Amino acid sequence: MIMKITPKIEAFCQAIVSGSSQSDAYRKAYNAERMKAETIHNKAYALMKKGEIRARIEEIRKPVIEKVRYGLEDAMKEAEEAMQICRRKEQGGAMVAAVQLRSKLNGLIVEKRENRNGPLEELPDSSLDNIINRKAKELGLTLH
Image (tube, rainbow, N blue to C red; front, side):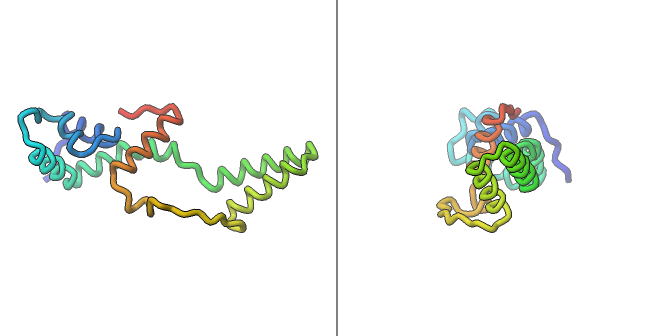
């Protein structure tokens, strides 16, 4: 049976994408004033287990992620343009920096960095939502 995305479910999904915890999103979307915290948590958890709700959350996130994504091809093109400008202006130091950038982008130079957060796949949804919201805000995008 396919679940209908009601206004309350939509509000729940929007709150999740905006960075609210599951329980806070439930409180924002539903009349939960008289509910115990444990009940709210359980109901929010049950909503998040539903495929239709997870799909709607991903649908809301998708345009933001696509706008935030900056690919290797874009970076290589810009680095090449920078190198051409450096050549024309005979700016050796800037050209070296552009070559280093292109080398890093191609994996020829690897900087050793410690990742304390782990892979993105292991981050909780709330952390991913916070990253998406921060990047969207930096780009002047608004989420509904």
